[in-house]
Amino acid sequence: MKIRFIINPISGTGKQKDIEKYISKHLKNYEIIHTQKTGDATRISKEAANENIDAVIAVGGDGTINECLKGLVNTNTALGVIPCGSGNGFANHIGMDRSIEKAVKQLKDTRVEIIDSCTVNGSPFVNISGIGFDAHIANLFSTLTERGFVKYAKLVLRELSYNAKEYTISYNNIERKVKAYMINFANTSQYGNNARISPMADFKDGLIDFVIVKDFPKWKIPIFIYMLLTSKINLSKHVEIIQCQKMTITAGNTLLHLDGEPFKSSNTLEVTILPKSLKILMPNG
Image 1 (cartoon, rainbow, N blue to C red):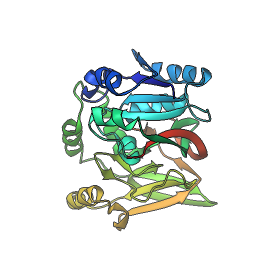
Image 2: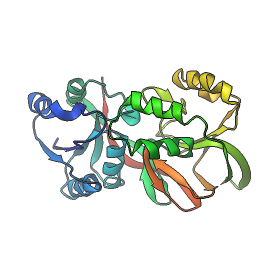
Image 3: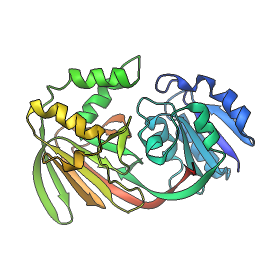
């Protein structure tokens, strides 16, 4: 198997600085390319697919994975990951070790799985995306010079005055209005750091889990966080999960995030599943 590593040198907290020595120690038949600017990972991934390289390994966080994904959907080149971001939701979901060296060693014993990916207005994602509070946080987090879980947690606590918004959702010939703090589009289970927003999400079932966090009293926020960290958020009466292949969401001045990366979009979002559209490397142990 020929592998191309795409390393984002500024992702997360900088855990990737020693990765090249681990790669050379444990693997053969690989090449390493460092990104220099936004869009490089997509271009390099497309080139890898065109060159019939077996796998692209995204070395970074969920944002780096998202960039690589754009070049790999519906190709024969598999996507793998070494988790070096702040949350690492996708890497955690598929079972990659948090230790960089152990994650590199996992690549010696993997299998190729074919999973679903998704799009928002044609832009792909593979993990968790959404609108509302978490998109607001993603936008603010992107401006910080220092990253990491602690910085993220402090930002969340600072912004808890955020108010729920009105949305119109359409799915399965149903149209509804909802007032929500956020609506997540979940292909997998978690944001990262084992904060599972959709504990039962399955990236092989041909469905997206739309997680609607409804308006609720602010004093319940500690309970919400506890349920998020114990994989019980789906049991909250303030959370509704709708599983479907496609949903249209209308809101005002939409800010969203795709796999944690913030974007401004049109007022209408069309979120769609792409069944069995992506090959990934899954660790066997």
